[in-house]
Length: 53
Image 1 (cartoon, one colour):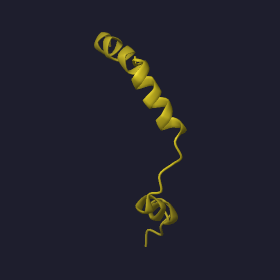
Image 2: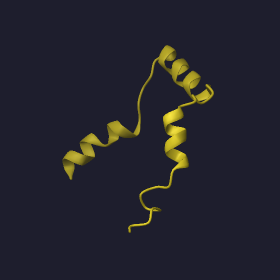
Image 3: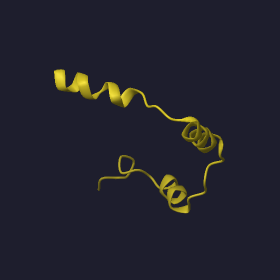
Image 4: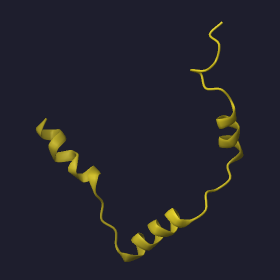
């Protein structure tokens, strides 16, 4: 448990310099990329929706 307490705080926050922060914000503000394979995947039934027989 102590090891997890030492490791997890690093994963809850991160520090960026001004240039990295600007790049991060630009990535968030950018329009989504069209990915045909993802679009195809999302139009098919999931394995949980498929008939098991």
